[in-house]
Length: 238
Image (cartoon, rainbow, N blue to C red):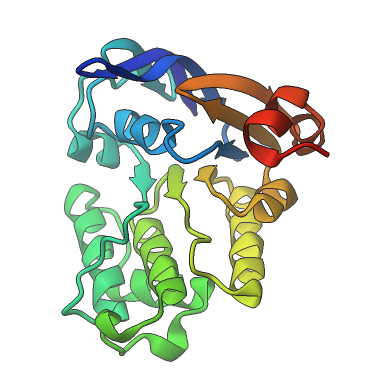
């Protein structure tokens, strides 16, 4: 579904990413973890077209999309959320999700009715009870779920989630994890950046660890947790 090959990004004298390779298979849930400043969001920006890499390339389902603008990548099935919450604050939860569903229909004429799509997504994410509330009055945890719902309304084949668990309480985090597992069971691939290590280890089939812009480990949750370099850089010594 996604292949990142040798991606590098420099900001002046700072090298944010160094030869990063990463793969996401169809219908898989892959984690991307690491300390603050490791380059995780920069990598997301490269994949989604918000940042041009200094070197390397990005392939989506075998197609080189490195030079495509963000909206072209979205139309190819790429969706994302943001580390810093980005919602339409003057709109309701339903209207935020509906905006995404209507955008999806604009480039896919065979898409179902946006109202029905929004209704289905709100139910799936568990936001029906606040569907008619303006988002500006919601908790951070609920706003994260609104972003996830809006991303799903575009019906992506690959969804990039940037810290969706930030601000969620225990029950909301468990709900999010169950939702992610349902998505991959239905065939959606997910790349997850998350500091909630317990969530990552529960739901991800593979975990990539970034440190100072470099991938220092790739493996199953158990393999990554047992990696001495990962413990030293991020998880802490056992």
